[in-house]
Length: 410
Image (cartoon, rainbow, N blue to C red; front, side, top):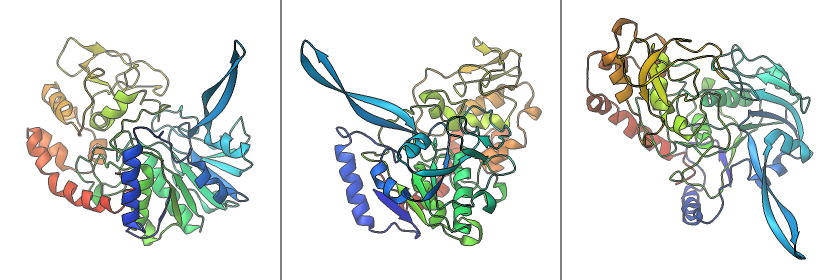
C-alpha cells in the first residue's frame, strides 16, 4: 500500500481504515513485510531515476528464495530467507543509486552516540556517503545535486529523543526545498502500542526533540513522516512530495523484534523497551550501562546507595569513554523484568532520592530530553509519580486526537 502525504487527512480515509482492519484479521497467518520488503510498490517509481538513499545498518530486507534438496531420489523444496541491505538490493535491480546519506552512528551503525560522523565512501559499492550528523544535519542543495528521488529507510524505536526522526525532519525539509520527491519505506515501531510522557514545549526544541509530541509517540516512522508534513512543521510551512510505502500485514498490537541493532547501545528487545524510560538518566550523573553488555537494561552510579548489584563501565563498541569509566557503580539490574507498557519514572525518582549528591544529579541535557523544566522541578520537590503523570493527561489526550489523522495501521 502507498500513502501520499500532502494534506492533514489521508485521502480515502475510510478505505484506509477498512484495509488496515483486514490486515489485522489476517496478520496471524500472513507474513509481516516491512516497507522495504514491499518492493513491488516502489521499484517501478525508482526505475530510470537517479536515487539518493538515507539509511544505515537497519535498512535490510528479508529476501525469500527456494532451494531444491534431493534425498532418496525425492525432491524437497525449501524456503530460504536471506538478509540483504537495501542499497545492495537496489543496485542488484539496476536502480541508479547515486549517494548514501547516513544519520547518527553512521552508515554501518558503529559510531558512539554523539560522535562526529565524517563523509566517506562505502567500501562495498564505492558510493559516496554523506553524513547527516554533527554540523550537517540537513542535506545541502549541492549534496542533493543530481538526485531525482530520495528514499528514506531507517528503523525507529518510537521515542522522541531517538535522533532518526530528527534526521527524518531535515530530510523531508531539504527534499521540499529542492523539489525532490521522498519515499519513506515504513518499518514497525517496537514500542508502537505506547503513547506516554510529557509533551515537548517549543522553547526546549533541539535535535533530541523537534516537535510537540510526547516521549513515546506510538507511530511508525512512515506515520510520523505524514504528521511532520501534514502539520506544516517544516520551515515556513512548506510541504514535501511525500510517499510512504507501508508495511504489509502489520498492526501495532503485534510484537516485533528488530533483526539488527538500531544503534550500538540498543542490543536487544529489552533495551529497546526500556530505552525511553532509562534515557532520562542521560541527563543525570547516572550511567545507563554504556560500557557494559547490558546497555539500557541497568542503571547505577558511584553516588547511589550501595546495593547487591554493581557494575564497572569500561570502553567497548559504541562507548569509547563511557560515563564513570572504570568506577564501581551501584544501582539496579532490569534486564530480566517484564516488559513495560508505559513511560516509567520510578527508577529515575528512586535514583534521585538515594543519590548522595542531589545538587549534581541533573545536568542541562535533562530538560532537552524531558522537553520541559517541569519534570525536573517535580522530582526535586518530591512529587510522587502518579501526580506527575496527571500533568501529562491533557497533552496526551490532544496528541492522540491529532495522531489519529495520520495512522496507517490499527
